[in-house]
Amino acid sequence: MVCTSLRQWLAELENLGFLRHVNREVDLHYELAAVGKKADGKFALQFNKAGNSSIPVVTGIAGTREILALAMGVAREQAAERFAQAQANPVECVLVASGKAPVKENVNYEVDLRSLPIPVHHEKDGGPYITAGVLVAKDPRTGIRNISIHRLQVLGPNRLGILILPRHLSHFFRAAEEAGRPLEVAIAIGLDPLLLLASQALTPPGFDEFTIASALYGQPLELVKCETVDLEVPANAEIVLEGRLLPGVREIEGPFGEYPKYYGSASPKPVIELTAMTSRRNPIYQTIVPATMEHLLLGAIPREGGLLQVIKNAVPNVKGVHLTPGGTCRYHAVIAIDKQNEGEAKNAIFAAFSSSQEIKHVVVVDKDVDIFNPEEVEWAIATRCQAGRDVFIVERALGNKLDPSSDNGLSDKMGIDATVPLDAEPGRFERIRIPGEKAIRLEDYLD
Image: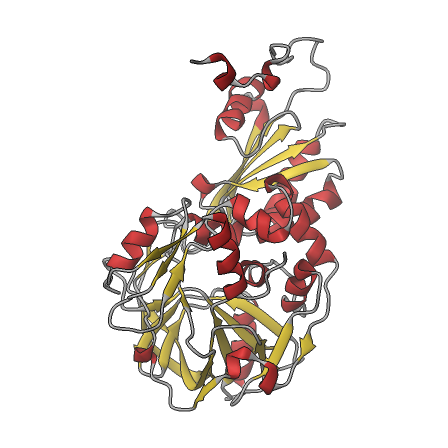
């Protein structure tokens, strides 16, 4: 079953035994995040008594690659390919009337963020943060939509500080600010994993990521018009915050514990002033505990899908791509190819670097290596790679400012060719095997 709302997905997780309920009261300062992190990758949690709020909080709904693949209707190894297909074959969304949109069951023009159970996640975080809000904006020059997730610090009852990295939203805001106008935004909270995945796609300017969600659903995503801004948001969201990015206004935002497991520093950042909040009746609040597998995987699979598309243009015989958890699902990529010609591994590496400025280290292996098994990848490096011949370094390329080892975003990059030379003598790199081993069930042999 394709789930097109958070509630449908929670029901599915409940049936699978992957959703657990926490019925004791938990503190929104640190305790909720700590419990969520303890459950990371094991099961999703629904906190029914989060602080003194009557609104339940869910986290960890996309905490494993297997669960995300299940939402996409494919096996774990096919998740990136499925996402790439959806991105290559977008499906237009459909607009529904407000009366048919669950997120319009409550409409409030006096926004008070204190009514929401927004957690403080880490010891040195600057305050409560919205971490699972999908932000919708339009290019002020073309009117084309873009969606993305940003860290959003609560600065006041109706004010949010926002970190905007140099991507689409930063271009939109710069154009609006140069014209002396605010940029209208809407933040959707409480969404199914397919919509969260779509928001993380690496797309060219002018591409509406909502259409990727439609393709993943296999049916048009239902959108509804906002109340105070000229934007459309998912009709099945739990909560929507409407507002404007204010031109010429900066306030201190941060620190905040980020996906590399370090703090992003405090500095003056743009400010969103909220103008309305709409929600379902009895809404569910959603948070993502930073640097958990849920956080990493929601970014990884869309990036892997984009990587796969780009690498296929350079090396058509690419078999798979994996952004590894140890590399924060951003900085380290492992690529499997069915090698036909010498030099293909290096072409794949260059394609990976060109597809994402975040990637620092790329390892290319043969198709017989399980790219999801770090021991197999390390084995390939150990037995199929010579550093003087197969490793190369690109100095001072543009990387990611959240990488604390970078020089304000400038980063060295390394490629490793761990593939077997095509002219290797027969048998030299043949893997040992025991006939019938894969069919053996150990439990059949044990008392």
